[in-house]
Length: 86
Image: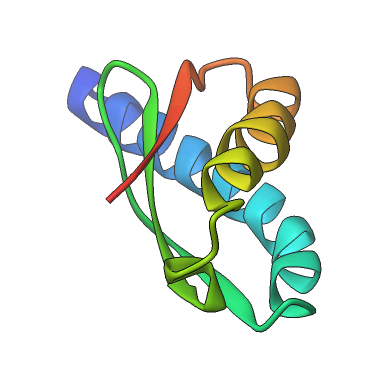
């Protein structure tokens, strides 16, 4: 296996692990008529998320992003450094 293939596999694995955590969080966000979408994961470990539905106008969305989503992701996926809303 070449180095490029290993990098691709590692990126896919990271994406899948982040997506799995977001899928566990999603029902809670949806219960408040919101949703979220994984946009990208940067090489630096920043997860970029788009908030949807009621989350767009919610004054608590920044708290949800940092205290809920980011904390869960950092705990479950050590490569994640932070979470940003796009």
